[in-house]
Image (cartoon, rainbow over all chains, first blue to last red):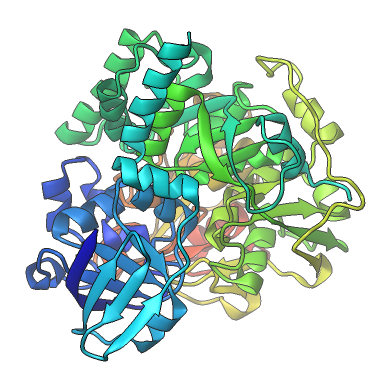
Length: 169
Length: 420
């Protein structure tokens, strides 16, 4: 998948309570969650962001609660990809499981500015900063995880696995 | 070379031979659960997956605890989904209001999570059960849906950091202070993707309630989980509770650790984590005087019977400060009943505290104690992020039940030593 989008920068330790405050967790409707994405951090964020935009953040992005509502809210608000210095582990799993591409890169977190345009080739791990004329090659994800993403997320993997087991019975 | 307790547990739960750190494995799951926030998404995905039944009706838990007893119509709809799913798929461990408790206190209490288990919970504080010597990890909704369909989970074999605590504990210092101090030393991502193994003479002397508190907050250092080797205290806790046979694993003496961190507890004072990260812990001597509007004693971190006993010891014969709301939330019905029998509830109410039925409620800003703009709370919960307990301009200070009780009396962050 090739993604092109404008960068919104975020600091270290963006937690899931900030991404989607718990007071909105009485629903799991992606559209409703998207309305409140990052509300306590920047109340204008959902108005400013365009479909396909990219978040570039500091370390430990998505720390805190296990709520899958956080990557769901970001994806539904239009975020197409997240690149961070590092991710909290549950957020990392959740993003992969729902098919939201995420990459760890200290270089990009350091060198990219808000408003830059990035071109991301998710399969090859190639990221280009068009404004700064820089290219980055990231380590590919482990084969098992790539397989989950290529199937379209963990839900599709589960369907395949259930079919496989049924055949083997 | 020897193995850590986590390597041994994972080896016993996978078909992969000779596990190495970083390997991605499929691990069999002994118990899995979700709550009224995380389950609704998962139950929908499960139904769409084509699965006809859950992998094991005895090994799945559904616990409405976050916004339950239902705080509003939308929450009621979410809780209803859990109940209906439990009926349709004959889930044995669905806990209705009146029998429920906060999941991470309830499941060990009921003997449903046990030493040597791989436990997967759709809640970040699932690491709490690591105190029993289980490998217990928090995940999101899609992972939970996959586990109830398949009975297994993909995971990466994590490295372990060993923490060795030695020395004599100071008065009013317990598991909460030890974990807040530890997080302040390594930071909120100091153990990201790794296991925190708590050990040493101090841990061997800690009660189960204090151990649960420590493992509960391993996630606040980014850890995959926290774990403590089972010993006589663990076995005594399990007696009469364990619903299945279980296996005890211990780390080998020559096990490989990514890092070993030694902590002398004799220097540790009661801790207070300032807004807005759990790593911002300060000793009470440097935290006194912050005026508070609310004190919360409860949650999966500190809502157990020993926590309530300590709070009662300090609140007995005292009055809550006229400008403070004290809210006490026993974590389970059994704890509530025990506190009632011991006279603790009477002490709380006489002192001017409010006692609630078990719920996660205020910890995550759900209900039962939301902060207004500019208000401050001292709380025995686990997170003090921006807006965690209410208005984005409110503040949460994390501390032990002893400090939360003393602060409720004095109207400002205070040590129990200041209460006359």
